[in-house]
Length: 358
Ligand SMILES: [Zn+2]
Figure 1 (spheres, protein in one colour):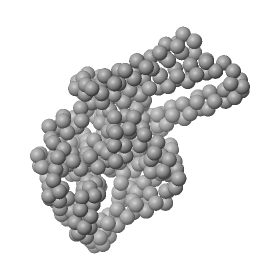
Figure 2 (cartoon, helix red, strand yellow; figure 1 turned 45 degrees about the vertical axis):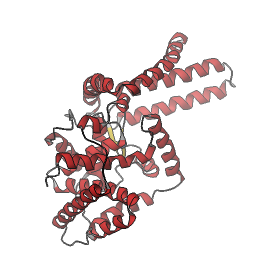
Figure 3 (cartoon, helix red, strand yellow; figure 1 turned 180 degrees about the horizontal axis):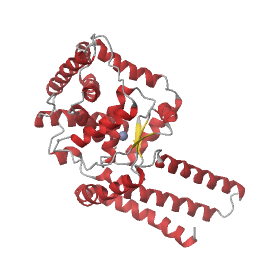
Figure 4 (tube, helix red, strand yellow; figure 1 turned 180 degrees about the vertical axis):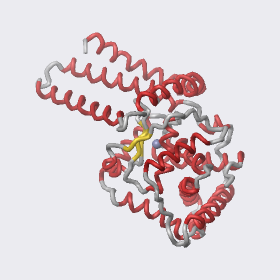
């Protein structure tokens, strides 16, 4: 690249930081001028450009980025660290360009209005309210579980191919009559991740590539987990960048769907968050509630737990730290812990909108 372009990009970086700082103070600007307008246009365009490609273009893009970075390091050594100023300028220009594209295509959504504000619900709830919500989920989970298996002690088996689950989740979004969640999603754009093995070791079920808006899922995870994972990634594609908000949307979409398997995934997903939250508030009560679950439901939970255990190791710890820092850098100061905020959304939304009809 020409020196002048490099200098321009490098100077552009602090300006971007300033812009982010201003946007953080003004979430309504982001909501109005980006998330519900420009982003919808750009994400549709990305879907039309990438959805017909059978593999993940975004994964290929990531691989190229890594090669570029390795080449930069290689040149550094080859030139014996001479012309350091140019090398550093190149690095800053590169970071600035990636940072800009990341925000332009998706990342500004981190600074939109918090979901509870756009839904007009509070985030406060008492232990009693949580208990009522959890009991209701348990009852619904148990009765659905009994419908899906011949014996309460059996786990629910998902005799679907991954592509079928993908279709079902896409249909769930398309058929959703929920007026509260804005769903401008008309193009199916979910793909198997090319990096599913490293993802398993890192403890990740999926991710959205902000540069192409393709949703990738880890195809190695148990099928029972796929519906909520896919729904979560679609939530990100719709512009709900934050983890807890994507989890909330995944719960609502799957729990409200007419397909019983999707509902089972959704109910147990929401239930797990509620029980974990209850455990922090009242461990004994949480254990008493767990004891009410059909033993087959616990087997589904166990299956997932065992899957992740098979892949735990130092990589997972490193990834958690890296991802935790990424979340902190992107307006989710609680890092990985912010995942439990989903309960606040669920309890209040359920209370105020009475949504779970099934
Ligand atoms: Zn996510």
